[in-house]
Amino acid sequence: MNLVESLRISWRNIREHKLRSTLTTLGVIIGVAAVITFVTLGASLQADIISTVAGGNAATMYVSAQSQGETGLPNLGSGGQTIFTEHDIGGIRSQQGVEAAVPEGGIAASTVEFNNSTVGRQWVVVTTPPYFDVKNQEFIAGGSFQTGQREIVLNRPATRMFGDENVTVGDNITVTRAAGERRVNATVVGIVEPTDESALGLSEGATPQIFAPTDPFYQRTVYSSSANENQRVYGRVLVLAENPSEVDAVQGRVYTYLGEQSDARELKSSNYRFKVTTQEELVDQVKQVSNTFTAYITGIALISLVVGAIGIANIMLVSVTERTREIGIMKAVGARNNDVLQLFLFEAVLLGIFGSAVGALVGFGGGYVAASLIGLPLAFRLEWFGIAVAVGVFVGVVAGIYPAWDAAQTDPIDALRYE
Image 1: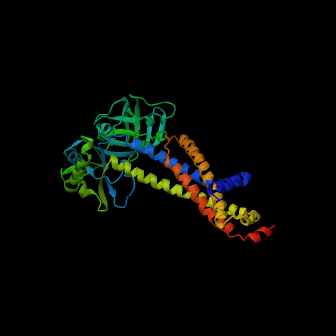
Image 2: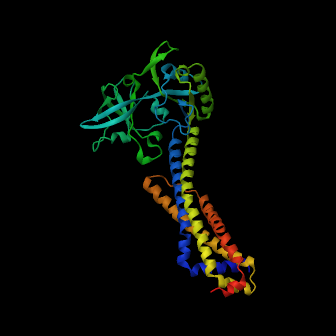
Image 3: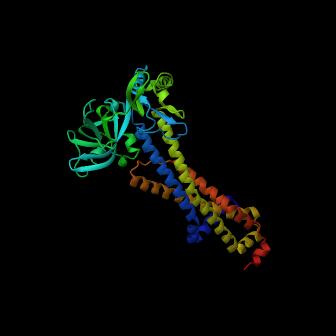
């Protein structure tokens, strides 16, 4: 029996049992659809985060001190071990190829008040005026604050956090510090777009952020042995290279300075290490974390494919039993064991291919709907079309081998006597 004839007979048998064939492939459809939906969501999330993170200044680096045991994404906030003094900021700024170096710290606010509205538990980022240029943040109104002035800058979500009344440039806001409950009145002088760090890759989920000058808002100090005086101390330093092509060279110089001349080398704990993260490294780590998460979720979805394979094997065994007499007639008129094996194996493979093809369409549709609901830009991985078909063939072969072999071993005389 040639291949075309085997395929024709297998397809005819599938069409004659439409309901059974559909229910048989349901497990494969659900499994493939779940896998592709999660892969599409993972790719969309990764693309959104990477486009946002990489959309910043390619010449920007983030200097921090991280625990030896920390893995994955670097700390995107202003937290971490607070060890970088004003002397260290100036030392980094003086390195060859460095255009700017700005500190980043923070204070906890128990409340933030505007007119008669109050919002609790806000984090205020304290820094210097060049911060917004280093972060490549766009002002949509006003401009940066001035050092020594009671001025603040808000991102767009922060202007809407007080309810129906939006904050605009020129409005006054009262910040109550969590430590000591000290109230500070400040004027809003600028509004910026949310950054990659506040949005975390989800454009509709950006968090409100408040930015203030270190003087007069930030008073945390430590003794600087290099300057022989108490100086403000920060948890992170943002460094801007003069040219993106010099990032690697500047990164090396900053590492050398931190290890040989900085106050931070004496202030940091022994189990902490310096980390100078570039934009490229940040993107690579985002990819690694998102790929790991996607693989974990996809692995769970693969369980449905196992269930689908068991379903195909079960139905094929039932089909062999139902068609025992047919098998006997086929063998009586000259069909060989290989012909019978081929016939039933093709039937199982066709069921697997049909299930994976439909599952792929359902999966991509599900990924599109899910990404739209979450607000992610859709990112398809077209190679999963081919993978889906390959999975269908594999599932069909694995599930159909034993039933096909069992059919091929049927004795024709016993089969003809089967009722």
